[in-house]
Image 1 (cartoon, helix red, strand yellow):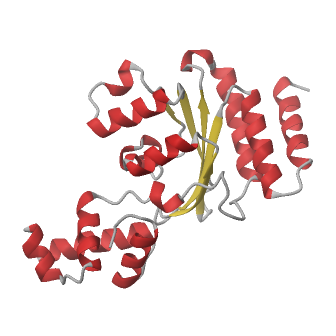
Image 2 (cartoon, helix red, strand yellow; image 1 turned 90 degrees about the vertical axis):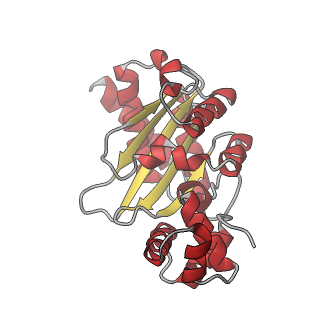
Image 3 (tube, one colour; image 1 turned 90 degrees about the horizontal axis):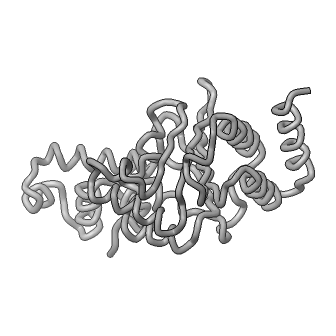
Length: 249
């Protein structure tokens, strides 16, 4: 039996001993710690609309709060890449190649990750062609990318696949629950402005006048926001935007 086969059996045994979503989540984190990880983030999105369904994370809570407050999800390469393909995505926060030629927001995200000790992130996506959901697990480490050779990354991918198969959404919003819509709904500035004005009672024509854009563009941005929020109507999009703190009253 090969080393990798033994590793898979060991992983399966670890998950087989769990009896709840909490213990499965703990087992997944412990497994990644054995491979050099310090935290993981796991979530699912609708494959067709790319709307978030759920997510959970063991990353530093202070980092996650800053991530939300500073709206860094809009420039997050792991989120932006979700609908592209199933190839892994790597990031080396603070590395000079990571901040060269990027936007100020992307440079800030890299700095925040580096400041909180995250030196290497490895995002993996899972989902068959017929699956309605696409899941992603991001492996976070305080070790540098140079510390992980191809065999290490292969083991991380194996462990991630088993973790995704055995870990589901949290049953309640505990410490490991990531406020998924706040993180994954990357509304543009214009979409937020229009939703904010809708919430203040403005109609399309008044919004167009105020923002100096046409009614057609107002409707286009509003439709894009509804899609991202998973809303069917204008009122529902306003309610969801308020709920997930995308806008304020």
